[in-house]
Image 1: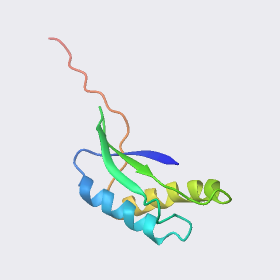
Image 2 (image 1 turned 90 degrees about the horizontal axis):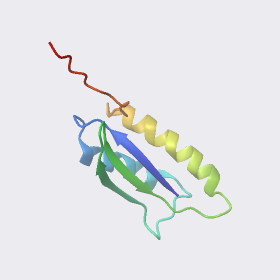
Image 3 (image 1 turned 120 degrees about the horizontal axis):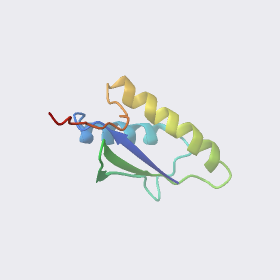
Image 4 (image 1 turned 120 degrees about the vertical axis):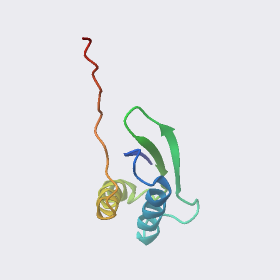
Length: 94
């Protein structure tokens, strides 16, 4: 399965990737082969988007999918890396 996780442009993307890899490495059902993949996938309108690809045994993949997204969110927040919300700048004509 795969997640797309956006972080603020002001956050350290390399640090975010390291944090996510650490969280994945600690979970007993995240497979080591094939290895999880975490990388910067896109520079979006409001965020730097990371792609996280994880493999898990088929009999537990759904529970792993639910659990890992929350654990990633919590781990990023502990390191003060925020998941941004879409923003718009409006310029008013004089």
